[in-house]
Structures are given as structure tokens and as C-alpha cells.
Image (cartoon, rainbow, N blue to C red):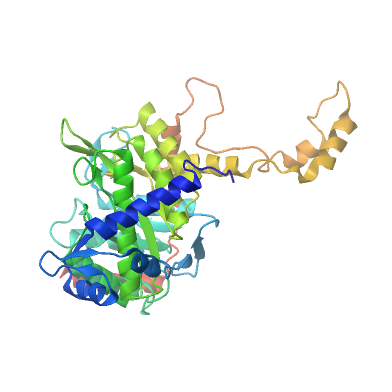
Length: 466
């Protein structure tokens, strides 16, 4: 792996100290009564009228010191992977979003249950480690049950680790019940099967709802993830460095609160600033500035021993074009350079509001290219290569050399079925190849979820729909 850094050690220490000062001087509004009282008892400076909590540096550091530096995730079939700095990253993929980027029209449209089913099958087929389904309705079903139809389709077709981002306490409690059914009737407590994403509301506010979600998730034995998304000029300073510092302070406050509730609880930290387009009032999530934010956030989290994640890809346009491809691969480059243990959002597009089956496969091919690049050269067989060169000698050719025959169909050189090597102008594009591959996966897919668990899920969801 390359040793890549955008800050010196002195600069990292200065930024970490700046985030500590924000928490010590500005503080965080904590609207959850139980957490507010715990912080007061622990030695934080708490104002009962404003609910502002200020963290003395020694208290903050003490709480952060108990955050585990690694933890395992798993699926229902015992597929376990460790999240830790320096280990191979966990790849998280997105199944559904507010929009589906349609093929072949290239136009955004609302998600259907068929999109959810197709996308989860593709993630399963390409080896995505972890699945995230945004709590979204699908077109065929109306009312509160619509989002649950989407989750039913996901769970019946995937045995992987799952990420949830509940929008209410009732949604979280129902999700926990469903996960128990999914786990064959056994509790998921401590199993590493579910990571619950819980926000801090920028700027510097921990609401009563988010407190309820955190306490309930920890009591259920789930791992938790801070989803911190300050918007420059709206909910954070209109500067790259100011939004970085505020987002890091919010992430550190979340991790500290988590350890106060349950020391040693598994926490994943995320700091994902975005840019406010001040002329139109738009929140632009996948701007080029985010490449720097990803790298900077990863260095700060690593400095404080906090496991962190980064978006693996993304693009602003709601279409398939050159900009979408360029932005996707640049975001993936930054995510890989971060060397964080959790890479999220495989398949995302439309400025983090869309997903498509083709995009999942294209971005997976980009990831394959980066993984090949990271391997570099293997110089362990220098002698074999000298022997090959000597055997053929001057003016010969290597078409039938033993090394050629042995490695011709191996992985010596990069090859991916979505890349076009034909040099023919009428050859199928990467997008066309991705669509064909998506149709193949859907046609040949066999669910890895045991039949009895699928039946149990069917019975549970039928009761839920009623």
C-alpha cells in the first residue's frame, strides 16, 4: 500500500486540538434527558437551561480511549470479516435510494420492488460485504408498509452484513425484530450482523430522537455508526477546514457519548461534509472538495484511534456520461487512498440520491482495477523470468514459452469483463456490458438464504403488512 498523507503530524495534532476546543468551548446541545444527566455525572459542564454540554479535554480523551480499534461483522451464514486499520476494507453497497437511474432511458425514476430485488442480487453476486437499504418506499405499495416490502426483498436474497438508518424509534424496534427472524429466531445481540447509523444534527446538536435510537441500539447489542454531514455555509462554516473541524468534533462527541452509555461499544465514525450552492440553495454532496475531506477525515480519525468509513464512489449528475464516470473513479481513488476499514455506498449516483444496477457493476469494475493496482509487482520470481528470457534468447518470441502458456489465463495482467479491449467502434460500451451482466445475474441468481428463514420472513412480513 502507498504511504499517502495530506497533513504533517504537527498539522493533524493541531486539527485534533481544534476539534477538542470546539467541544470544550462551544459544546454540544444534548436534548436527550438521560444522556444529558449521564454527561453531567461524568464531569461534563452542563447547562440545564440550554442543554449545552461542554467536554473537558481529559473527559473527552478518556471516553474515546475505550472505543475498540477493531470489531468483526458477520452475516447469517457465518461470513465474518474484521474491520480494523490496515485490514482489507469492508465494502458496503447501496440497494435503493430516492431515485433509480433508469436503463436504457438514462432518466431518474422512483424505485420499484424489481429494482430492489435486482440490486441486492447483484451485490450478492459481486461479493459486496455489507448491504445498506435506505428507508424508502417502492412504487407498487402505498403507505407505511411500502418500505417493509423493500426490506423483505433485501433479506430474502442476501446473507451479508446489514446497515440500517432508522427514521424513528418504531422503525428501529421493528427492524430489530425482523433481524431476529432473519437470524433464525436468535437475537442479533453481539453478533456483528447489524450496524445502525445514527446522526448528529449539525451544527452540534444531539436530539432526543437520536439519543433514543442510540440507547436502544446499544441495549440491543448492535454496533453503531455516526453519520455526520455538515453543509458548508448552512450548518457549518463556509470553508473546507472549518467544516472538517466541526464534523470531526461532532463525530468525536458521538463516539464519546456512546462510550458513556456502554463502555467498549463498537463505533464506526463518519464525517461527510458537503457544499451548499449558495446561489440556488442546493446541497451538493459529491463535489470535488470531498476528495480532500475524505482523506483529511481519515487521517484525523486514525490519529485518535477511531475506526472510520468513507464513501467509495459517487457523482453529481443524474445521468450516465463522462462526468459521472470521472467523478466515480476519482472518489474511489480518494477512498482507497484513505485506507479506512469501511468503504460505503457502492452503486451510488445522482449526488447520493440515486442508484442503478449498472452503476453497481461499473463501480465494482473500477474497484477491481484499484485492487489490481494496489498489488503492484511480485518480484519473487525474478529467477524464473531470467530463465525464460535466456531460454528464448535474442530474436526469438515468447508466444509458446512455458511461462506464457502457464499464465495466459491467470491473473498476471488486469482483465475485467466490463472493460472494452476490442478497439472496435461498434463494440458494446461499458454501460451496455454492465446492463447485460445485470440481466445475467438476475436470471441465474439463487438465494443464499435458507428456505426456512425465507418462510419465517414471509410470515412475519405478512403480519406486519396487516
